[in-house]
Length: 203
Image (tube, rainbow, N blue to C red):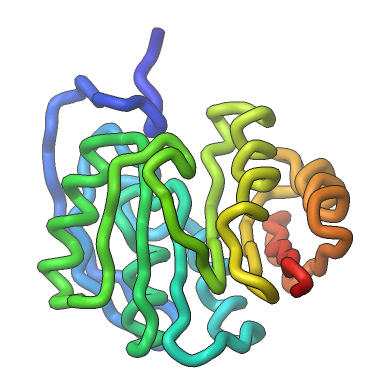
C-alpha cells in the first residue's frame, strides 16, 4: 500500500526543507518534509481558510483553538500568531507531522501552542471555542464525517467548527453533515472550488 500523509509512521526518506509563509498578515518560518501534506508550502485551501477566519470570525477573549489534522502546523501556528491571547492545540496521527509541528512551534517562538499525536480526538480531553480543520480527504468520507460528528463533544457552548473542503471532494456532503449535527451551517467563503464551512454549537 502506498504511503499517505495520514499514515501513522511515514517510511519515506526524510528531507526537511524550510519555507517562509505569509498569510493572514502573519509571517512564519516553516519546516516541511516528505510524508506530510503539502510539503512544498502552504496549500491554497489552508490559505483560504486562514484568510476567511481572520476576516469573518469573532472569537471570545483568550480563545481555546483546536487544529485537527494539523500537518506541520501552518494553520494552528498562524492562528496562534494572529490571536496572541489564544491557546492553540494541534493534533495529527502522523508522527513526522507532529515532530515538524514541534520544531515549527520553537522556530516561530510561539509559547501558547502545543501539539499531540492523536487519531482525530483520541488524545483530547478539553473543549474549545473553535475547531479548525483542513480534513484528510484522501483518508475517505468516513474519516471526514467523523471529524465533523465528534467535534460537537469538544466545543464549548457557542463554539465553532470551521473547515475547508473542495466542492468536487465532498463539500456539499460535508455541508449537509454539519447541518444535521449542529442544526446550522454557513458557507463563509468560496474560492476556486474551495468551500469554507462553519457551524456553531448554540449554547
